[in-house]
Length: 157
Image (cartoon, rainbow, N blue to C red; front, side, top):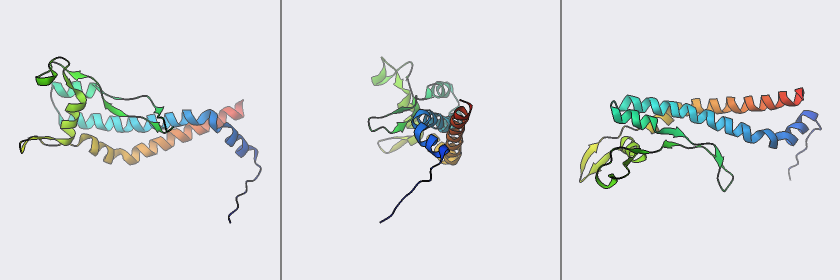
C-alpha cells in the first residue's frame, strides 16, 4: 500500500487554500492565449488561400468564442465562423450562404457526381499542425503569469 505525506509549509497551504480564487481566471487567460495564436495562423492561411471579396468577408466573420464551461465542467473555447454571405443563392436566397459552409468547402473540398469542384486547402488543419507547440507554450506562459500574479497579490496584501 502506498502512503503520501505533505510537509507543513505556509506557502503550500496558501496555494491549496487560494487555488479556487485564481484558478478560473488563469484557465481563461491560458485558453484565450492559445486560441489567439491559432486564430492568427488560421486567418493568415485564409488570406493566403483566397484572394477575392469572399476572403475578406470570410476572414472578418472568423472569431473566438468566450471561454466557458460545459455541463461536465470542462473548460472550452471555440474558433469559428459566424454570419451569412450576401446575396444568397439557391436554397439560401433569403438568408445567404452560411460562412461555416463556405469554410468547410475550403477546408475539405467539394465534389459532386465524381467531379471535384474545389480542391481542399486545409487552412485549419495546417494552422493547428504549424502552431500547436506555440499555442501550448503560450498557454503555459499565461497560466504561469496568472499564478505569479496571484502569489504577488498574496504577498502584497
